[in-house]
Amino acid sequence: MTRRIAIDIETSGLNPNTGAEVVMICALELRNDMQSGAAFQKLSKPTYPLTLMAEELTGISNSALEHSLRFADVADDLLTFVGNAELVCLDWKFVSLFLNLALANSGRPPLQSESVLDLWDKVPVEFRGQGSDGVFSYAGVERNPAGPPSGEISRLYQALIEH
Image (cartoon, rainbow, N blue to C red; front, side, top):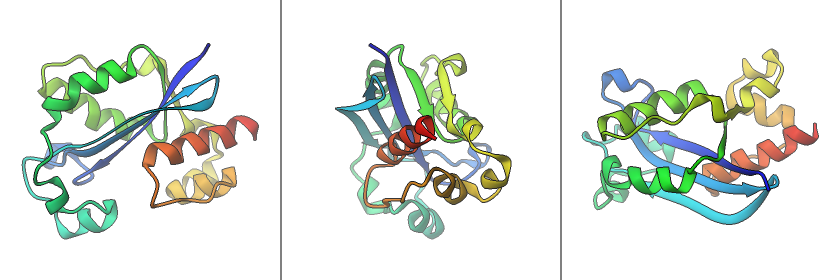
């Protein structure tokens, strides 16, 4: 039985070198390419408050993060949930930059890129140039901003493997 994890993150900014951090981690287990129901979703309190722009882009408020744990406090749970499953994500370069830095800062090992299926690679360049909206459009998947980001990645993955 193939086990994959659809994973996505929300961040407090676009560049971890300027202090931006992971503020939400969403992961959804796929068994034989179908959602199993097992999920991991945690908010992570950043060192600095979110800017108004980050709140608007992520839909996550500073007040929602107020009582959240720091990334280091949820890192082991994330690594346990992921295990040795193949990761499915959109834009591994971005996701891994933030997650692996947060894991390193927590004294944990990085997620391995050999076990990642980046959905960017399944989409023609002209659609990638339109950002994630272009990717979803190409796959024929309607976005659901109310759902967990990993659910969107899962639906995108399923559409692209059938494409």
